[in-house]
Image 1 (cartoon, rainbow, N blue to C red):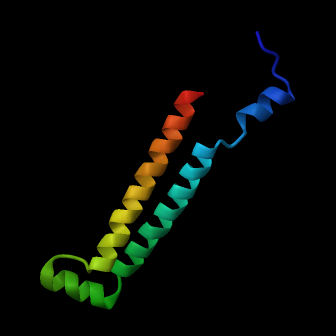
Image 2: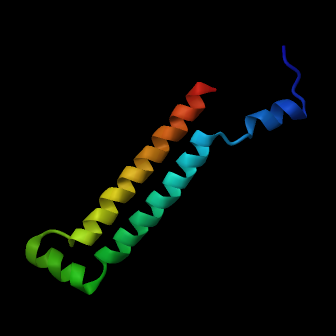
Length: 84
């Protein structure tokens, strides 16, 4: 049985490269989703969505990129925790 000392606690909190990349991907994804949300409320985007049923290309790219970054960050975080 391992003693629970300061060294054991510090080892658990060390950020691996995978976790750092995951946190950065989550932050970028959240920012992109925020910009997509802000863009969808813009008057030009509202008119475009009302006439065509779709958002503008820029808003769609922000939305797709944000979802991809968030999904990638979550996968990296989950993969990193399962490796121990």
